[in-house]
Image (cartoon, rainbow, N blue to C red; front, side):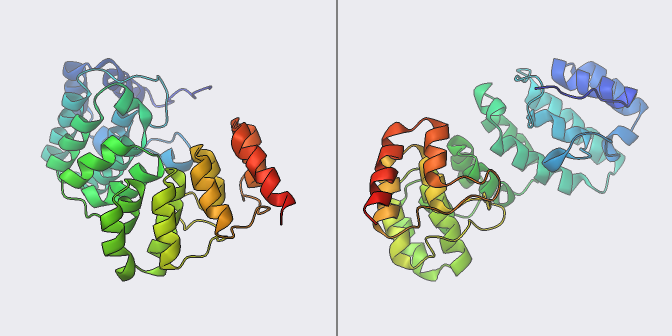
Length: 276
C-alpha cells in the first residue's frame, strides 16, 4: 500500500517522533510548536481525513504496521501537552483516538491496545463511544477492556460476545435499530446460537445493516464473512434472501463466499438456492 508523505515538515517531524517512540524529541517539538496539538493536518482520506496529531498513536490506518513499545507514554506526552496548552478540541480528539485504537489490529498485534485504552480512558475518553467500532472490527480484547472501563453492555455487545443470558435480558427492551445491529453483530462474529436468539426478537433478515455498522451489506453477507457455516445456515433456514447484492462490491452472499475462499459455505448456498 502506498502511503502519501506528510507534506507539513513540522507535522512530519512530530509523526516521526511518535513512530520512533522518541518522547524527548516530541516534547521539544510540542513545546516549540503548540499549534501541532490544535491544528488538523491536510492529509489522509475517509475516516482519517485531516487528522489531529494524537490520532497517529493508533496506527489506524496502517502506515508502518508497528507501534513503538512505549506508545502509551508517547500518548501521555501528547495529552499532557494539549491539556497544558488549553486545546479546546482535546475531548473530541481523545474520543476519536480511542475509537481508532479499539478498531485497529496493529495496537493489538503489538501488545499495546489495552494499555492505550487505559491511557485514553484515564485521560477522559468515553469508553461507550469506542464500543461499536471495536465490535464492528471484531476486536474482542478491546471490547472486553472497554466494558471493564465502564462502557455499557448493549444488546449488540452482548450478541457479539456470546452473552446469551444478556441477549435474553436486553432483547425485549431494545429498539428496532438495536436489534438489527445485534443481528449484524451476531452474524459478523459467526455466532449461530445468538443469531437464533436475535431472530426470535423480530428483525428484518434482508435489511442492510444499520449505519455505522457495515451498512453496505446484509446479515447473510456478514455471516459468510465470518466463515461460520452454522451461522449462514441459521439465516438461510430462517428465510434470508440469497440474491441480495451488497452496496459496495455488488456481490451476493455466494459471491462473497467464493471470493473469501469458503468453499463449504459456497456449496451450501448453491444447494439452498437450487432448493428454493
